[in-house]
Image 1 (tube, one colour):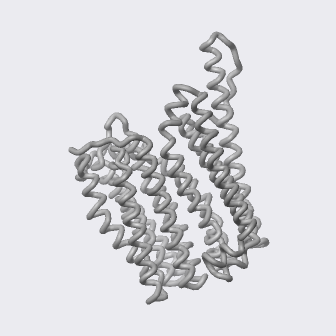
Image 2 (spheres, one colour):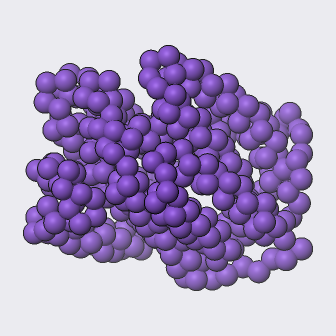
Image 3 (tube, helix red, strand yellow):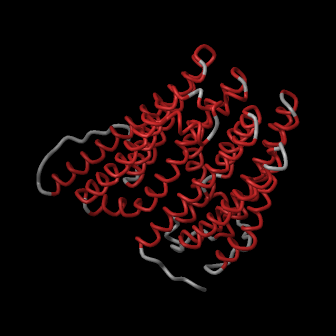
Length: 428
């Protein structure tokens, strides 16, 4: 069995590179679709992904995270794969029901897009387990190669096929086939170098995986819904073209989120260690992360203020540039989301999982409420302000929780030195 652990810095670089390349390629795929297809078609595509993605993460759970963080070796890849087969079967049932409902209320093409997007999520969920094996064994170079290979191939396919057809379904079919090929020819082979990936059917292990993975799946689903929920109101009220306009603006935020997540995940183990060993080092690393990320956010805000309309015209089209007045608040919402991600991951490093879930749930509730009450009257402006306000609430709660956690840590340190203090418990 091959096992060669890389240094933290090397693995962090590969993790960031893989996330940057992955998010960048997906951003370019979205641009290609916008360039070659009408806004209605783009809106149908975006709407299908908005339905298929949260449901997939909820039902399939976060088994990769459970596998990667399993320090005691309770689970093997085979346990996760067998559990994922069962969750995929449940997901397919829901997918068929949603597709039939969409066929009745919509069009055949919308149904096709939903089914294809759903099956892409299914095969990606299998790749997730194999990549989890690589991540657990600190083989982030192999992980990054897989991500780069998949997204590059899909990007080339999307560019090629868009010149010869006006059917977005053809792009998704290629996306599906390419993902399956990379899983079979690379992901499974590389994961097999670090242990058996054969299916293992064990009811007790499956039940334990569900107990551990479902709460994580709920958390990730809340996060995804918070960024997609506006589309559920925009589509029936304003039409699919408006979904495309909103999605095009938010796509900048999603790209930045993917990059920030890569950085955060590479630092999360060290933040966790510092929290237990030295709160001073924990604060120092957190301030560095906040400082560097804030400078990048400031550059983005200034860029939008300076050349926002040019950016939308150049990357998309004059049609999408008509919503340039919404670009600045979208970027502000994105900055709050990124800050919330940093603070939220710091909370995670402190093992305050419930607090972060409460923050996510509160933001989602506010987002839904504003969209429900205001989109029919104010249009896309209401959806953007809902994203801004909800992200602000989530970030504020995370900030309060983190301040409280660090204060409690300081008080505990004071007790160790014979001092006294008051224990404050807020959302923890």
